[in-house]
Length: 307
Image (tube, rainbow, N blue to C red; front, side, top):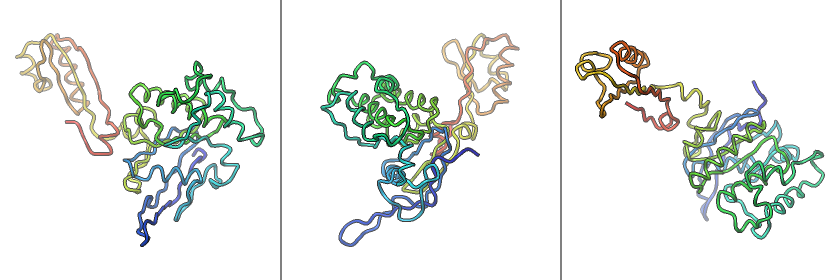
């Protein structure tokens, strides 16, 4: 088993509100483990407890019960903090600063504590795709550019663990793709990335493993690869070159629907798809396309199986 970078153990957080101390349970017995080198998605709807979990992880809040370890250390331990890069959900930016000065300022906060050579402004801005705007003030940045400079800020100490709270929130499709690509680049550089999101398609495309929260309770934790293998898979076959009576008269093809000069067949069984393709070839037809569809994360979490 790989080294655990993050460990939540029976983590519970209860808030008190109002004069009468009304209780609200934000997290309820959360336990999970994030191994070194993983891109890990922390999922759930708004209010599921994701930000609470991240704030406890970063030492910004304290658990009611349970514990958190980072590299086997307390989140409050300076040795753990030195190995983490963090971008909150609503970061504050010094918008009068230019990008290069902004990074220099955050790097200076570490002083000589880290005792190692840190990445330069040029390296960080190149990594996040902002090399051309190093001398531009942040107040002129778009939402997507601000998210990327926020990640550059989280990397000034060359961390082993990068924690991002809703990094894709509020971005347009282009900005979301840029953010996904950036997270993948961090993974390729050997960083462990732990990020929260409620956008399932984004998480599914880049994560190795996920945890799904619902009202503070962990409903699922596991590998994306295993989710894709589970459940029924829809096979889509498009073919042409056969007469209507040939299609209707063969059990493996009879469910096909005519679309113009071609036929479209859906099945959830791989054996049926294989038999249909062999029949098309045997009868002298032409296979135009074959699309095996794997189970999506949305299907798995919310039970939406395709027919």
